[in-house]
Amino acid sequence: MSFFKSRSLIIDNVIGKLFFLTAMTCLIILSLIMIFLLKEGLPIFKYVSVKDFLTGNEWYPVSDPPLFGTFPLIISSVSVTVLATLISVPLSMAIAIYISEIAGSKVKEIVKPAVEIIASLPSVVLGFFGMVVIAPFLQNVFKIDTGLNMFNASLMLAFMSIPTIASISEDAISSVPQSLKNASYALGANKWQTIFFITLPAALSGIFTAIILGISRVIGETMVVLMVAGGSTLLPKSIFSPIRPLTSNIAAEMAETAVGDAHYNSLFAIGIILFVITFIFNLAAANLSNKYKFKSN
Amino acid sequence: MNRNIYYRKTRAIETLMMTMIRVMSFIVIGFLVLIIGFIFIKGYRAISWDFLTKMPENEMTEGGILPAIAGTFYLMAGSTFISVPVGIITAVYLNEYAGNRKLVSVIRMGVNNLAGIPSVVFGLFGLSLFVTLLDFRSSILAGSLTLGVLNLPVIIRSTEEALITVPDTYREASLALGATKLQTVWNIILPNALPGILTGIMLSLGRAAGETAPIMFTAAAYWTPELPSSIFDEVMALPYHIYVMATAGTHIQETRHLQYGTAIVLITLVLLLNLTGIFFRYRFRRKTMNR
Image (cartoon, rainbow over all chains, first blue to last red; front, side, top):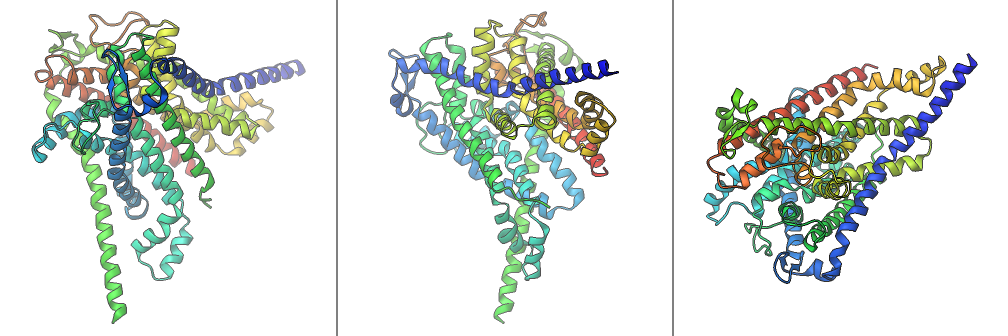
């Protein structure tokens, strides 16, 4: 009996240690990703200075001499993200408020899974829809040269980011204590006044977290912008300019490179930029949600 | 009198805003219906038994998409070999074993950041580590590993969510009966958390099936003459197939119906996986509410 007991305790101990090692996998992978991005990306700075890489206006990686200026790509990423966020935030807020404050339980059971289904749609399908439906539509309506442009990409990206922003905001809005709302009603406020002046401000940190995570998702999305953003490496002039954000540039050009050449390195260096941006956004979101989490119950 | 005007004004604003919220919600859901409906209406004629079970013919302008379906299934299955065991064990460690709060929060932060990394960066990672350094080349193996790593946070989060709902009294009862920690985890905690874990696995399978950017450099081929015979072979995959058919080559317009057909197959697969996952979670929530 005691032999059996001590043996199973030893096994238990060993297993505990193994579990610990396995749990470190995520951290190891995160470090490996950083190491490999740096290892393959940093050599580009033998060919071009950090300043020229970030602020150069021309991206001609295969010309002679090659030019590695990512500024137009960065501006493309930033502008498409801003536009997508402007479209997505009001719609996401509407959905979040609708689910948590307005919809009856029957409607809720349809709308909530529907939002989850939006989240599960493969991005290549959204890109395909943007190409074959939205692009010709925009081209006809606005009489522009090409429907594959920043506006089209922002529409599809906005749609993509709605589930992220809406579901996290909805959690935050739902966790606002009922007593706060009751106090507001007791003072004579109507439903909208309560939502706007009481519930939303109380849930604001959660909503900000949601928006940050949504933005981070939009910046990192590849297939949609690869298929519908148009692909021009020039600086965008209007919201109907074809553009090429950072992510799609990696996807579009990787096949042209040879392992270890300058072009290959430059695409990994773009990966570093993306990694840093999304890393900062995720840390910011985590900080915000930890700091001001509403204590439900 | 003044008060009356004020009330009328606030009532009008309330009605207006409530209507706007409803309309905007309706627009979002309507857009979802539009996308899925449009693709199904445009593409259902392409779907046939031959389309699902035949090899592509005539430079992919005719025939079926069997290799793309097979490739996607290989990648889905392959990715679970990494994501499921490592993900579940990580979640179990974080919830049941770890004593050090600081360490737990560092690991959680790592998981969150991993979840936020753009999928194309995972592609770069897979390309430099699996394809180049470990010399797996562009293959099922390299693609599965990349997708497996990408899916780790999905499994970890949903498993953790499920573990939290198992009441502490279950753990205490098991330990009081003389069970070791491992026995408690294996016989009591995991079975009770199973539906939640299954949800995570379904969602991760859906993601593995639908992701394109991570497999572009690590697994996907434009065209393969035969079905893959080993894990070191390149494969066709549904999402990549849609992408290349819609953007590259000389037959973009002629093969539109095949593109719609492929999109239907992919959407159906992903929706089935996700709805199963959502269903499991729904039942699980109902059950845990009664505990």
